[in-house]
Structure formats: structure tokens, C-alpha cells
Image 1 (cartoon, rainbow, N blue to C red):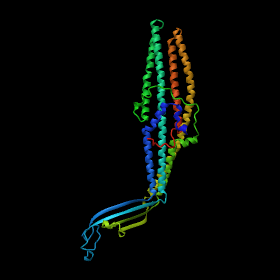
Image 2: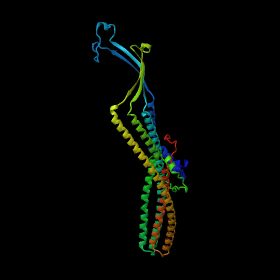
Image 3: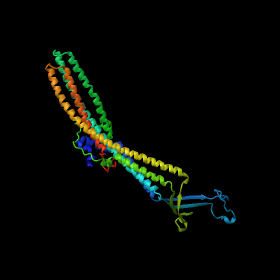
Image 4: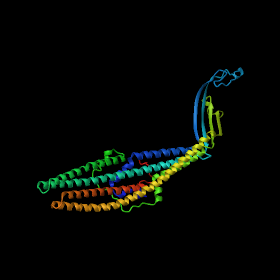
Length: 441
């Protein structure tokens, strides 16, 4: 598990490890994913509270002026006979009120419980989304870093080619001036030199772009890493034996598979929420408080009041809409199931492709290493024969071109091996621990 969680440590590259640590702390995509986890956690806690009673404390004060009209403002007849009127009663009155209201929806048919289940499944899915963002970031950082080192190696090879062809140009120029060879050899050597020099700007442009990309992945300005990566170092090498694991372990570990499974669980729970909407909802409500026309009387026993009782509501006229909602929830569940199956198949495909790429690039590197050695010998022999006057300069150029091509291909092959290793461990779900939740940011 630790080997998978920190797979890049097998490269034994302190620079890569430092860049990886900064990227995990500072990358904006990870901060976004961590914020989504916090949102889902808050939503799950809010859903859980639906099982508990709700209550509120209230209080008010009103200054009331009654009408003298026999008919009240609401159109209710008022007894206006002399016996019912008290001339000593003021038309204006104070009204004090304080109390407590409570209500509790009884989850008889399980709709609230299913909603809580869906909310926590969504929370789990967001956690796995964070893990997936983490593994994706780590894979991208490693691939970009390997690309930087690969381009630096290819740039060194191209510069060696330029140096060699400059020496050839000087040799042919001197021999041409001495009348030992024709001006054609000198012109050809100069043309090959300028062609080699033209390779360098393209590689430097790609190298700068990769360094800038690495800086952005770290959550920094693009040019911040240029000085740190100025010195070229060898390409990261991978170990000979790689622990891969079983397919069942893969299914338990890959964050995207785990996320798809939790999304399926959330969609399944939503069916229960929709089914519960077909049935009536039962509630128990009550209130207790005090009401008086004077503040001094407010908390007296004769000023208190209370009420309690059950209630229910059943929107039977919306029955067809509720049935349609159930069908919608089932269709969403089926979509989530298909997405889960697709995620599993794609994961297995990624692992197989990465294993094939890794093994083939290893085999290819052996052949290219032999090609480099053979072409290096051919260059030395061709140059010796040319200087001895028994070989044309064209043979030297062809041998040098073949050597450069073999060296450049070998550099790309070594880079591809390292990238295939990164792809393999990303496909295996490596790069995160169970406890990781983005809180380090």
C-alpha cells in the first residue's frame, strides 16, 4: 500500500519529490475538489438533521387599537348593545407573547432515511473525486517532469551533434583549402551544421513549455521553476521488478471506480426517496407559551397556553407526477450502473495498455542501445577512412546522422518507459492514502 501511495519515490529523485509535495499542497484543482468534499459533508449533516424534531422560540410585542365600528375589519359582526360595551375599557391595548413551537415529521415510509443515505453516498463520491484529482495531478506532475528531463537529454544530444558537425565543418574547410578535397565537401559540412543547429530552438521551446506547465501544476507562476530545473539531470530510471497486484485489488483501490460505485449507491437511494413521496407524511406538532396584555402578567399561570396534536398531508392529485419521478430516478440509477461498468472496463484497459507499453519499451531500449553502440563505431571508422582519403565525406555524414537518430530515439524510449511506469501506477490507483481528505490545504 505504501509502495502504491508514493510510487514516484522509486525514481529516487529529490527534485521530483519536492515538486510533488508542493503540487499536492498548492494545486488549485485539488483545492476545488477539497471544497466540494466540505460542501458534501455539510449537506450530509443537514440531511441527517431531518430525522430530528424542529423547534423554535418566539416572542413578540404589539400595541393594538380596536375599532369602534360594529363590524370588525374582518367582516365579523360585533355585539354593540349597551350591555356588551364597557365604557371604561380602552380601545388601545398591549399584547405580549412568548412561547415555543415544535414539529416532528415521522419517517414512517423511509423517505428521509433514504435521502440521508443518498447524501452520505454523495459525500463518499466527492471524497473519491478528491482522491481521483490527487492521482491525476501526481501522474501529470510526474509525466511533465519526465518530459522536462527527456527534452533536456535530447537537447544535450542535439548540442553534441552540433559540436561534432562544427568540427567536421572545420576539418573539411581546412582540407578544401589545402586542396585535399573539393569545395563540395566543405559546403555539405556547413549545410549539415546549420541543419543540426536548427534542431535546438524547437527542443528549447518544448522544454520551456514543459517547465511552465510544471510550474502551473504546482500552483505557482509558470516561470518559477526555470532556475531550479536549469541543470540537466539524468532521466528517472524505473526498477526491474514492479509489484502490480490483482484485479480485485485494483477495483478496491482506484478512486474513479470507487467514486462511480458511490454515485450508483446515491442514485439507488434516490429511488427510495421518490417511492416514499407516494405515501402520506405524518407529523406531530405542538406549542407552549404565554400571552398577556401586561408584561407583569406574562409569566403567570393563567396566561399560559399550549396545543399538541398529529397531522398528515397526502398530495394525491400529484400521483402521476410522483410515478414519473420514480421512473426518472430508476433511469438515473441505470445510467450510473452503466457508467460504473464502463469505468471498470476502462480501468482494466488502462492497466493492460500500460503493462504492454512498459514491456515493449524495455525491449526497444535494448535494441536501441545496441544501435547506438554500432553507429558510434561506424562514425569513428568512417571519419578515420575519410581522413585517410579512402572514404567520401558523405559516408561520415550518413553515419553521424544515423548515430544522432539512434541516440535521440533511445532518449525518447527511456522517457517513454518512465511515462509508461507513471501510467501503470496511475491506472493501479496509486498516489493516495485512505486518510487523505485535502485538509492539508
